[in-house]
Image (tube, rainbow, N blue to C red; front, side, top):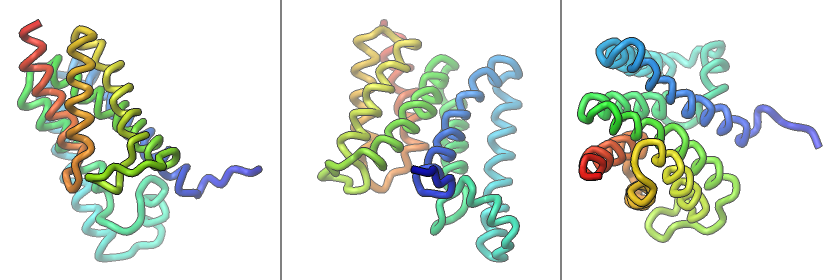
Length: 194
């Protein structure tokens, strides 16, 4: 059996490695402060939007070869990177540091895991959202609950993971935005009570 690095599976693995790499925004905030990181997210949003428009309108073959190493074909290029940056930036702007860190950590690890499990092991589609599976949702819940243990007590981590896994299942809502915002909000509200 040979590995085909151009397969859909390895494309998704490369995409999810970048998703997980977003956890680097936490030490960046700790080291440089919030303002430079928000500036970085803003620059990323502008750059990827401009590059996506250019690629969509120009069809530059050499650039497409580079871009589609990490990007799915058929939609606006860099949609995932754009919504990830928007979700992260809003979370850092709206919530205290620890709540924002929790949101970014869950987005980085639980969403990446649920995508891989759901796409490649998910055979039981959700009734409300046929693009997602029970297997991916359960993977999201487990990883989110484990990640949240670094930020809140165990019972609260399970509660927040459950609520956010329900939000993540919703159709037509970009989970790169809803996951960090909902985790940040729930950790901010309930974490301050504990």
